Image 1: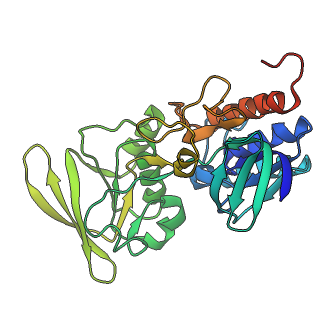
Image 2: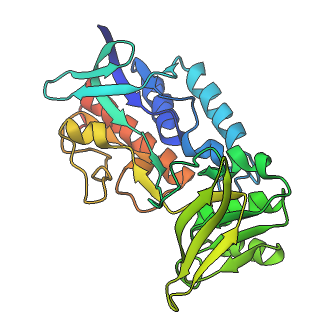
Image 3: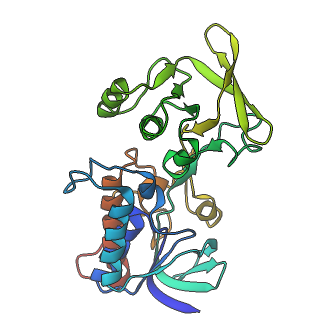
Length: 309
């Protein structure tokens, strides 16, 4: 069984920042990632609110974070999902699809996954016209009719990405205005994106691929069929915390891991940072800060310097 000082689960912005600070503090540090490094950050084609960068793509920012972490000998094992945790003892046991590790401290930075609408046709046409990532799949819909379902920053960003590929973009939202940042709203107003307010998707239809959606106006009750080639669903996220909850880590009613100001969970030596936590601001900058706090406190927990409490 491999022994580590610090194991971090998740190689997004929070996890890579925690890895950097753990290693710089002299901790033997391992990051486990079920996919490739990046998390939600690499879905952003353009980031303009991360301090120090006037404009940077999500992929470029992650590439820089990975290079920085590996320079200080952080080991990053990608394509290695964690399957089970045992957090009862002083040493924390982490089981993956490949092997089992032990660590003195653990930081969970697993982020969130896209929430589904839960309507007929959604699962059937996933990858066949239904998508949860405009950056990933937008190129397949060049010149076609697409609809974004949602009303937050992700929906607005997805619409702007798609508007560069096709002039036939609509946003459907169950309320009568978006809750996106003002700068995104200004960009949307300059674009040709259309809005369908107070409307909910009830079904996604097609044959081999998506052909139409059935929607209902939640004020008038009017039911309408809209022809469409692609449906991009942006209705929020679900925290990737089930494996932690099963190991005894406390979560709130929505599944977010409960942490204190030091990113500590209810289990000594176990921390969480980034979008998977109860922190209400889900941004790259806050994820980086939380990762730093978690790694710094984990160093104190492991090495027990005079100032640690």
